[in-house]
Image (cartoon, rainbow over all chains, first blue to last red):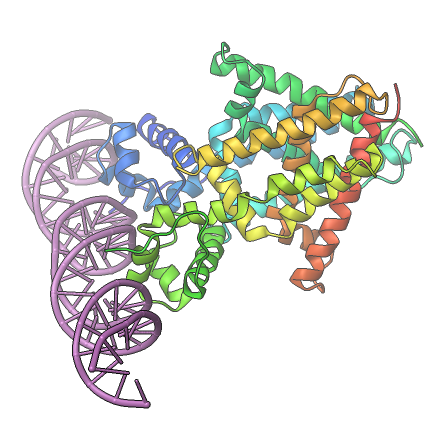
Length: 216
Length: 216
DNA sequence: CAAAGTTAAACAAACATTTAATTTAATCAA
DNA sequence: TTGATTAAATTAAATGTTTGTTTAACTTTG
């Protein structure tokens, strides 16, 4: 007997507690290094509740991903289709949203990075599909800007998105290393987070403007 | 009883076989998802040989890292200190070496990415120290170029190296995704590797020249 | 009073590591 | 070269934990 839920259903407080605890532990120790006992202990619930609510450890991590991925595409589309803004404003907005989403949610994104690296994770197809859509949406936006004569012609969208994702993920995953190297140890975690969001956004904005707009 | 070895000692063929098999499996499945049984089976040796030669699974992964990290710093210094080349030639050389080292050794670098993400891995101090030295060497090079008036003044070295490392790691770790998206499925693994090394190098060279040299 | 929630205990399978027995290889005096 | 001696290499089997999951009993709730 077991009480699994469909995608559209909402989670009760205990389920949310399990999801959050699992996300935190998967992020810092990895999927296989985290036992269901660890998760149950972190969430303060009985071990059996995880099977009861989610079926298995594997289905639990799937639920975590589904819970997060759903609205990102909508936000992305909304940002890039906003015709009240110029292309450059929308590019800035895209970069800032992107960076904030990654650096602002280190736990989930560390999990995602790890899953991408691992070839045999079941959630990988899910991630792959969602990435592909992100590439397409951004590619469409860049092409539109090129046709308007705003962005340079010779832009490699795949490489651009790789730099956007790669740089941000790298800074997020080595943020405490970054903190020490920049003498920012007096900052709290959320202060550091905000600092990194701003600095990384500005760095990437400059970078992309340099190749998308300046010099022929 | 056990036959562990110091750093300076060379590995016998059977030890090398174990190291290579472990690197391959750790890279594709992760440290905790790989059992010593898997490693022993992959290498075609008895399970007990791993404890016999390396002491434990944890010490085995340490040996893998030590085996790789040692000469990278030397290569880096050699590249940047070559006075027969201009600063721009040395920058290009740095980028190409960097990219080739990461994309050319996906197994090891996936392992390294994973270890960096994971806070509780013992090898992390080792990685941290070696990264810090890399930042310092590159920082010194950029500063020298700035004093010569070749590179722009307002360059954030931390962010630059983050883009260099982040972009390359991202492309390496999502290379098969990249292959499908670029319709390059006819390429063999090593052909894809060479393609990615060249394209990523060129992308990063353009990117860095755009902010280091062009426009005031 | 039935369904949902919750629990401690039990389960078999997989895990890293160790043991003790056996084979291989090297050394060296005769 | 031979045969004895010793250390290293190798093995199958066993060890004791830890793993994810299930069970069956119990409590709460509508």
